[in-house]
Length: 214
Image (cartoon, rainbow, N blue to C red):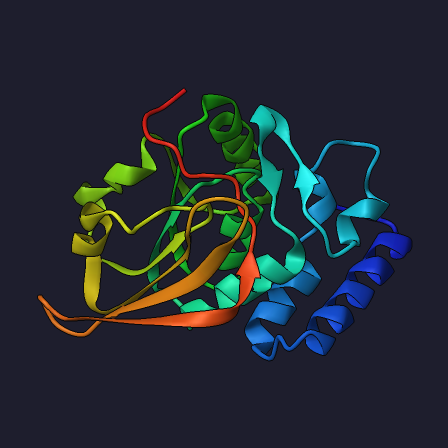
């Protein structure tokens, strides 16, 4: 979609700020430089879309701040054509970043309002993203295994069903913890029965991951 030079300039400034904060993956930065974040938030707030902060969207949810999107994506260490399961479609922005980087994206959203809105914008922007209205705790077993799994809501612990759907050699990234802050956690599946867990130092704040659909 056509946009003003002002918004393009603001997005370029945002990319520079993300570099200053430590984002190094050129593919992540290039995707953020290309995807028009203002299309994923309510109209009238176009300039605010390129501030590095979260923003309220429908259903009492938020679109994560750009740094959070960037660091989660960077931690995935994805390769082009990786099959990725995203838990928590939300506005659809994170899914589009992954698709822009060449991933085969499957994304699940429990709130039908957000699911329908994200599906609509995927079509408008021309991205072939597989979106589902469903319970993220269940994953999407019919399309497993996934090379990467990304959870975009706070979860007290990783459901076994999602670990089972992670491919051997694959990686899962999720904010783990309860209350106001969570620790970004990375789980690598080494073999059928062996997983390695590591953590990113900074604390994050996400809305909680809930069961069921609404």
